[in-house]
Image (cartoon, rainbow, N blue to C red; front, side, top):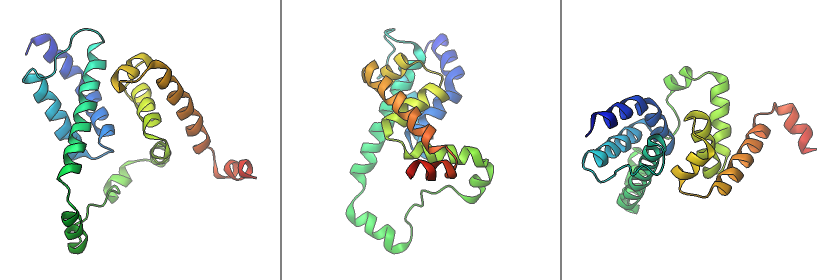
Length: 177
């Protein structure tokens, strides 16, 4: 691997992990696996940057695609018998954050996360790419492999819905009347 690419990857690593974490619905272990597999694709030259987009945009696309591959692979491996056994033995995975993790998050961050989870997947993805990863709408469209018009629409609808969800409860009650 070229030194320039290695330097770019090193600089992007924190953001790349944040994006992988988003693509894996907050599952740290899966995000680590996805990011490692994305690095492996790059090392084995199964993914190469062709220069049509910025390196960051391309890299986030590789991570997103890798996360989708992993998700499909996991779903394929899950069997009805395996799910039933997990429920019967009590080994079913609890998706809620641990109590220590809850303590780490402040109240406003927790509220924002809850609101983001209520958004449709595409809207949440666009908002994450634009606000957390500091990508432009064009770059987000490239990462998501959708048109810029679609990204703009999901972006505007996501912001409007998030604004509504973040209003205090008394405002929600007045709006419902």
